[in-house]
Length: 143
Image (cartoon, rainbow, N blue to C red; front, side, top):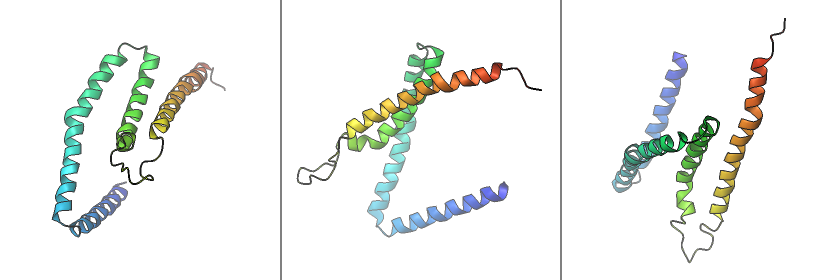
């Protein structure tokens, strides 16, 4: 296992080095902008987003039945992460009136479809998978 970890670490370091080498070729301004963006993302996540999600999760989930609460957490984490990833598309940030092909899809509709899919997966899990596991756990052992 140590050899696998060391190999993966070396591959990761090589890819990181290659990426940095390519970034240096883009100029110092781009490098400073990228580092600022990366640091800003970590600060916003750790100082604002993570505490807000923790507090909201605590306040909401403790008012829900346990069976619903665990799925609400799962849905919130999945949907929240995916929402942050597609937020520029949802807000149409960067759209240009003179370019009809840029951000020209119904992204909000797909986001709602994703939310419905996540709720469906959670409900199916609770209604189908959990009872089957309980049934298997209560079956007598075969000899």
